[in-house]
Length: 248
Image (cartoon, rainbow, N blue to C red; front, side):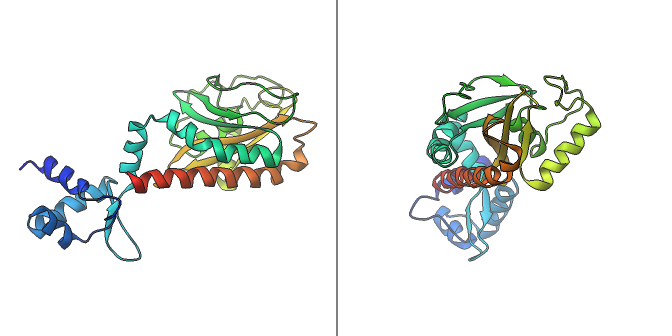
């Protein structure tokens, strides 16, 4: 039997009623020597397809299975669908427009949005490709992924846009330390916002959630309060991604 086939059969042993096994149990299920299963599980765990439960020491499906399952279910489209309810709750609490964005090459693209309750400040950003250095979601995504900023165009959109590479690196380091990003008139004069990262079950940043509006409503002194709401929503979306991982 091919090693790949054995590995796939091993993964297929897991189901909703049996989400955790020990190596000996897997060997019995598959009719293989325990040493063979031990090598298979070690390789699968190294690649993220299995993980060891800290509480029991048993093996369960890992985050890589969840990632592939998410892709099979529609990738970004499914992520956008998952995020709708948490985003709507954030709008209900804060009143401003909420956007979910992902990196796309050297740009950042909004994949979902829930409009705020106000007429002024509403704009449909879905599908719009933005420059990451001055978009609040772009700052988060660059800070919490392995994206390189060398060669990134730091074009000035307003007088407050960061255009110096060293200053921008410092800004990304600040975002990493704080766990959130803000923009105050950097993409468009009079437009302020905050954003937080959405992490999946493996701790990878999959998206960024932002809350934005005109500066007379989204005032600088209100940003810490809005950030707390935004981070809570990002965590809620991340937890939903975790459910996909456990159900995959």
